[in-house]
Image 1 (cartoon, rainbow, N blue to C red):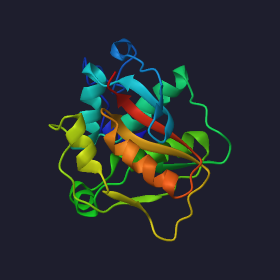
Image 2: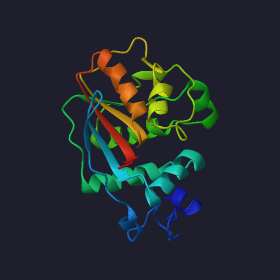
Image 3: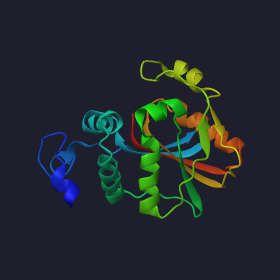
Image 4: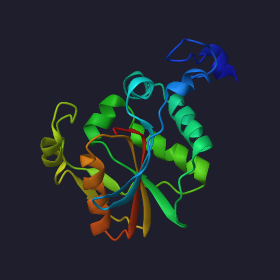
Length: 202
């Protein structure tokens, strides 16, 4: 492709041209097993352990705008294990506070959701909105993260919550953000809620 010629992909780990994670360095990615019954979430599917190479490539996505890496990570994960989803599952994503998304220029969770929609053939809908400009979760402990996220989301007006929802974010650490979003979805009528992230802590 012309884009690949003008902006060649190089392995983030070794520098080899062709992919963001070459076949050899892919061995450094550790698969993360699903976790179950997290608040209102039945199952959380985290593709990779949030460490080393996976952590570095997600940093590149969020702060350097390497969006193509999202496609590569998800495609690689689906080659190993495609998650089970009930029929008529709608994909949604963790929203950003409007001003923060305007400044950054994108919401990585939304980009991940769109790629999942393309792969699975399922509809992607923005069911939630963030109504509170919360502090960064990075330096907060588990209790502080839960308090920070409390009452910071709501269902978007004039949206109808489907029975089956796949909620998407980039990373699962304490789970505070996704649990709060899932709680709102449950209160809004969702019967079964699953989670999907590129990586999670184990």
